[in-house]
Image (cartoon, rainbow, N blue to C red; front, side, top):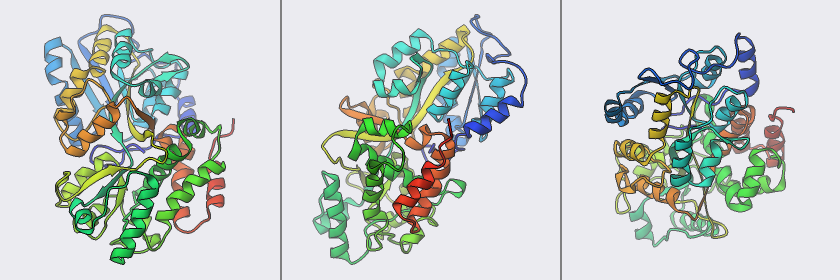
Length: 439
């Protein structure tokens, strides 16, 4: 699920079938941006289209302002809540922007296979080869052709807790997933209250925080190869390895003794807005909460300081086998034009110079290894950058963002709600799997 740095949910990827209907409703062939320009010298203006809005859009424009002046290129940014549907319509109608910032690699791949996108310039690919991992490069590669560089990123699967509460009770940060489950039991026994707080509520996207839990467990239990096969539906949701991940999550989220601190019983998870547990963390009602790196903003807004020696801190969901594997999200930058100005902007956005410029403005991170972690605006974001830059880290993009939307933001979201509300695992997995489009 695409989330901004402060947790605002952006529009999910449009269903491939819906996009197809929208495309057939428009006339004309593949567009090239700038009214059909391609390969020329450029006119000094480059249009960029994406989902990043409001204050974050202002910071995005600020991040490249000096570069614009130095290079005499005007970058004109436009955001839209309807990006996922409109980008396809605009491409088909010959009215595509020069550059699009894709929140889901699957949408970039769909447009690339339709021959709307231009392959990335060699200078961009050189930057990505030098400053990103092979995992990240793969998300911008379609059928062995490289189309787009990563932009910003997030790390999912942090466990938020109170360092002072842990110290007072003699609780240690767990080194393995089994130790985290044991810690959960210990907290319950010593306090007599539920250790965990959770919220799946997110309007039409209710359920997405549960998918993050499952993705973390699939990657940690079954490994990256199985994770990739699952995303591609080479392994279905009904496979025992996926069921095992659900059952592991259920040890916590479906246990009435372990949830839902400060909000009610297990059933309250789906009605609790995903941002609300921050207040329970801040006032000490809740001891543990699973959420991504962006959650530091919610905790700060709840009146708590986020620091290793502050009110609230976080550790990454522990490994099962000792490997360093994390899930996360981010954006991929693709282009509909290949004129000189567009190529120059693409090269800049793939550079460490841009990454440092944007991250220093606050609230976001990047997986660019040329980024100085000290530029991050919080300790958690610094830690997240270091995780992404560690060559030993195996990174996998959020599975629901990679799957067709009929599944990823459709049956998967709904299935998590049904599952937490009492449906058995086998029934839910069959229901989720039924959302996969037929060949």
